[in-house]
Length: 88
Image 1 (cartoon, rainbow, N blue to C red):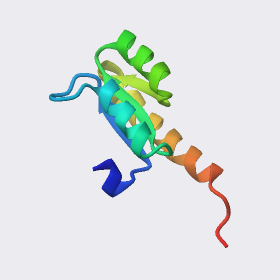
Image 2 (cartoon, one colour):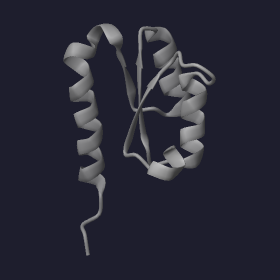
Image 3 (tube, rainbow, N blue to C red):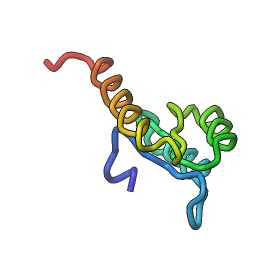
Image 4 (cartoon, rainbow, N blue to C red):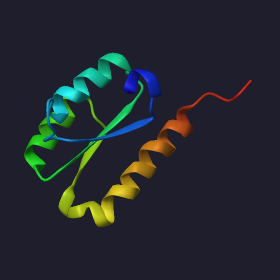
């Protein structure tokens, strides 16, 4: 789907059926290097390690989702538009 949709941001859980989030992040980086990746998980240690390995922009734990998820996603989207070149 990343190949077809070219999303700005992907939110990945570490534990997913078929392919875990770290493997999925690797594939996303391969297909769409500009897509920003944010891990969403209960596993803080795995998320930190996965984020570092994949160059992900970070993680949000599920226990902190109520206060941190939307602000984290906003920061990623705003960062993309601050870096975008001006339209011709």
